[in-house]
Length: 141
Image (tube, rainbow, N blue to C red; front, top):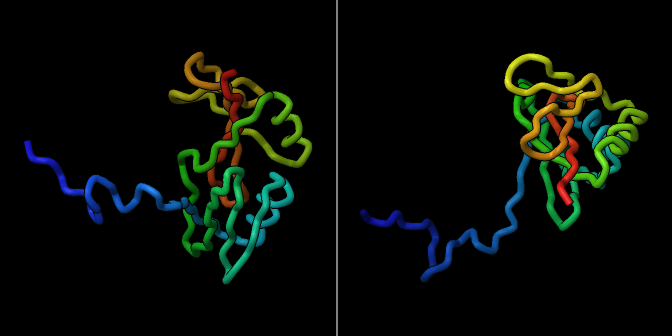
């Protein structure tokens, strides 16, 4: 079996080994997104040329861009780890966040929105104003 060549490979190193890759997602209203991510979630948000950039702990940046025919992601686009899920949910609820309740399919939640699965972390899902799915999850100690 022959090995697949790595694009941009220099010696034994990939050209992407030290790159500062970033992720991005679309919204249908940049100003609503700016208010939600900045004020509701309390993240640092910058705006330039009609685009938003979220500045996440650890130096990670996430691009948010407008898209006229935006379709919300049907999967979780951002996960926010917390020490105490219930406290985080209470704080977010006070800020106007509504947690998703799932009662059909493979994912089920309780009446507050916490996953009932015994596998994986304690997690709850909510949506941004554009309908993209986000989560808050309690990491195991």
